[in-house]
Image (cartoon, rainbow, N blue to C red; front, side, top):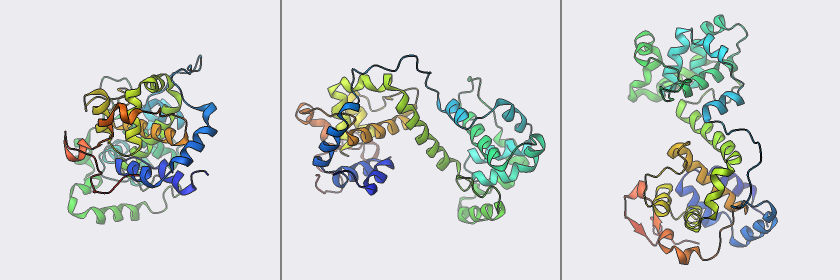
Length: 315
């Protein structure tokens, strides 16, 4: 018996505690999981595996996106000479306009500065500059965007500051875009949505290339108990981190930050389900408190329960 296509799709989309809980309740039977574990035993993650020798350094998200999109610094320098491009990226990064409208608005100026530019390529550059605009100002890759200047010069980009007409403005922007870059996958996305997708893509890359950061944790029964409880939907990220490390503000992977560290936990939960991470016996008895239902982000510190918040049972 293997996981159904539907269940695999659901697990690939897991990002919240409720998703994890629903999967633990309905997604995979213990028997199916044990069979899957036996099939992948030879490729299971263990704490004793050695990292690949001479592997290239793991890129941070900015360099990863630059590499995967083949971004050249010369392209960035060229389009930054366009006032409309800088203003459009400021508005896009601030959640004011969808990506497609940022490209549409700045297209003519940017194209004049970079003749080989295509609409799709322009939006790749918009995404890249938006990431670099929120980097630490001391980072050499940081790009400064002046939102106040952009608002003063191009107020049409900031209509969504009137929160009472968001749907109207969204429809207006999409209507104006028309047939601009019709096949670009994220043309209708606002920054928060596109950023979330880019984070998930990056974390998948980081997870596959950061064994030296992940595997030492897999020799720690305390961490594995926390991971098991997280996989089973008993705790949120904050609850798991507090249980394991004693500090709910602890960032599991500082180079990633809190949000992407949560996505790594989701990747580890997927690996548990695939049988690539083995959960040893006896953890529930050794760390019983870890398996209480605990979501400090939603219900506050020290609010624990033996039953899920909705009052239902657990498989």
